[in-house]
Image 1 (cartoon, rainbow, N blue to C red):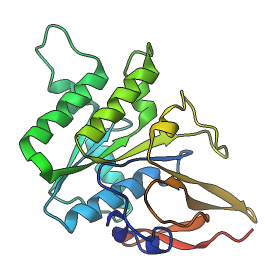
Image 2: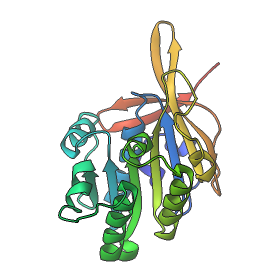
Image 3: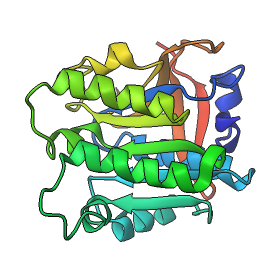
Image 4: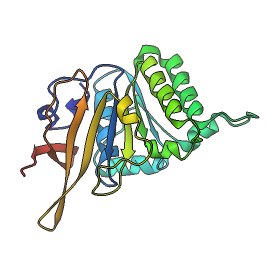
Length: 231
């Protein structure tokens, strides 16, 4: 299961999500969204012979790996890390560059053709970064098509979205929340002049789960889930 790589996550999820589900993980900067998604993907792939892809549009591959290493999260060989420059490089020399969303789809298709059913999971960091690289005209229909393609590829996908700090208002169009199969909220809680971070599952189709907010922490082995938040 995807959740087995994070200690304490068994208290949040009681069974696994189905293959091909699209899960949005949203929250403000610094709420460990990227680390949580990356740890789920990397730990899952370390336990299997499958193949996965993590596309980071917020930073370079080197910067992302440095940040994950600082969290104690290791990189399995069967998880491909790609960034904006990698995607653009694959289309160099073409007279008419396609829309960046089509480029992403083309790269995913390339590895799906190469790896076949072994290519099972995908992470995108982040949706806001993707918005900044594509034309906003007909954005809703473009994202509907993109999500449809991810399902056709049968990829369990984790899509990261950024929100303003201390707010659950999601920047952008918001239609993706209705298209997604699952939504995980992450954010800060102020407590006696300190800030704690929490994780809460808002929805997850075909999956039994808790609806409580759980405190999260970082240790030597990465992210772990602690006790429920007490009001």
